[in-house]
Amino acid sequence: MNTSIKRNPTREVRIGSVFIGANHPIAVQTMCATKTRDVDATFRQIVELTEAGAKLVRVACDSQNDAEALEAISGKIRQLNPELQEKINLSVDLQENYRIAEKIAPFVAKIRYNPGHLHHAEPEIPWREKVRWLAETARKNDVALRIGINCGSIDPTKKAEENPIFASALEHVAWLGEIGFDRFCVSMKDSNPETVLRINRLFAKRHPEVPIHLGVTEAGVPPIGILKTRAALEPLLFEGIGDTLRVSLTVPNERKREEVEAGLSLINDVAAGRRTVTEGWKCAGLNIISCPSCSRVENGRFVELAMKVHEMARYAQEYPITIAVMGCRVNGPGETDHADLGLWCGPNHVNLKRGGELLGSFPYDEILGKLKEQLDRLINERQ
Ligand code: SF4
Image (cartoon, rainbow, N blue to C red; front, top):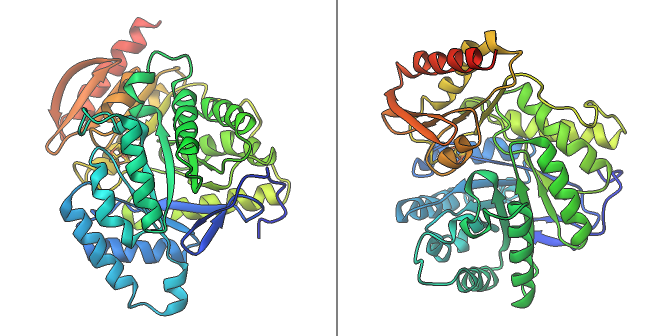
């Protein structure tokens, strides 16, 4: 379908039954937002997203319970008809608990690690040794790796760099090269489309051989989330950059397939030579960033909250103010640091921030009113 898109000559990487890189079609992928421990719901979402066209479905795995659930999910997949089974390729998303990789590697086709999270668990072990161990685990289990860098959880040793995401990517690519592991791809995600465009161009120039996973992180609710993603990904795909992609959208669980549909539609447009967003497009007024939610979301009310923030803040459309709404502590504190106003969700309370300053934690029923007070104050100050 998308073989007509001119592509950079990246190296071929096999991920289960799908190949990315070289001249293979650009693979659309997505991530489950169900609790991984909820085996039935996660299994159903994996099947639904695969049937919608996802070549790879990612699942968060942070604990022994998640690992056991993944094993049970894998057992259910093996009971499906062979044709569907063959189409399902699972990727696992690791955070601090990188050691869990050993338990889940037999059930997945790819492991995503985030360089920013390799400094927390077992801090006495240098990150290079952790990556060596991950690469050996991947090798033993015939799985691929992704170096997955995200603006909301930057490697603390890179924060002072002018371009921390790029610096982190270069360092990890160099190390995997030194230890002779080349079955990997790289993602460098930011919530600002301009940054995604710039970093991926830079990286593709420096490492034309490395397959790239594209995405704008925390793009938010559709249709603006799709527009932000296209603003970065359309120019990149037209330049031959990108081997796999995810459109990250804040939607309820039952609408998760929209991420896949948005990805497929983007690829179809590029294959047909259609540009839908002018290069250089930016969110001129109010910019609401929100994560797509995943198994780690602290309260199921998060998606509803993100949507209500859009409605509540409609009156402020013309003001160049950024509000970040995040589902948990993983990228929540980091992403809200860079926003004018930020919310990140805990189990019963939502943390409200102004820039890097925490203003307080409020119950879900009160947070919108508190956010509005701060938004009004900010607008007044800027007039
Ligand atoms: S911020 Fe938390 S809940 Fe949202 S996608 Fe990231 S890890 Fe998942």
